[in-house]
Image (cartoon, rainbow, N blue to C red):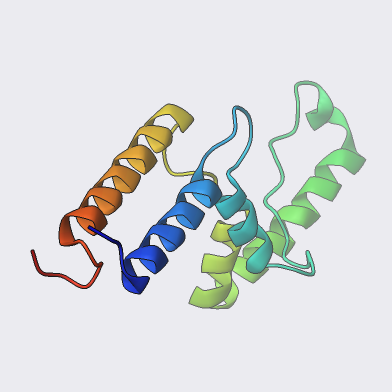
Length: 126
């Protein structure tokens, strides 16, 4: 039983998805990093700043700087739905914890490989 051209392409595409979505021990997967970059390649969109640390709320300059950053973010967020979605995707993280993601990707790979081998030529049949 041989795997045809469509089967090879399907296996190749699935392999690329698994490699791209495979989460590292720390941080984001290659796929998420690509999405984060793709929505803002010039790094022009603002990011919502973290809350001020304990004791910094007494520093007037730090409060004003954070407020200005929040205002810039809110203005961009209120602009339109596309910009709002881009702001969300710029800081998006992998949807599941790494262990769950790895398990789901292995299931995907097994199902696709089994399906391709089962159909024989990758075009259906048998």
